[in-house]
Length: 87
Image 1 (cartoon, helix red, strand yellow):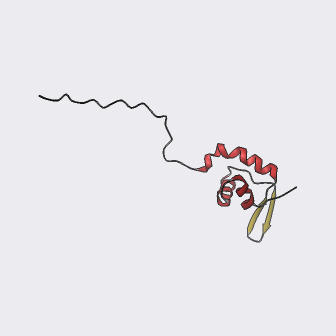
Image 2 (cartoon, helix red, strand yellow; image 1 turned 90 degrees about the vertical axis):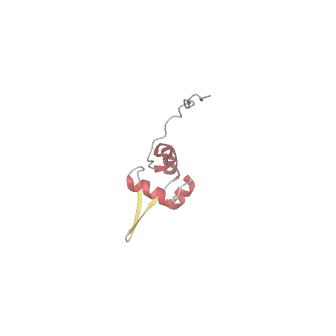
Image 3 (cartoon, one colour; image 1 turned 90 degrees about the horizontal axis):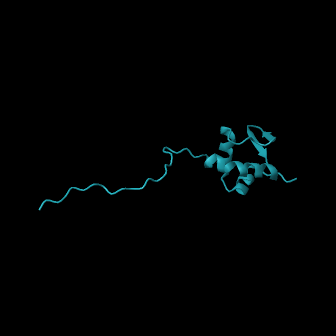
């Protein structure tokens, strides 16, 4: 059973280690059961199965980005009304 650090797991997922750590901190992703504390730091040990579970969750998180405006469906544009020219 291979275990990976958070940075290695993030690399396998195609995101940065900071992003994965932020998702864990905000509760969007549950951290793995294997937590290693070394002094003031906490590390997580990820297995292949846990990485695949997170891979399935990533599209639902929408990369964790908060957008100011929601994307709306494009509405067809109608030409602006013009005034008739004077002769």
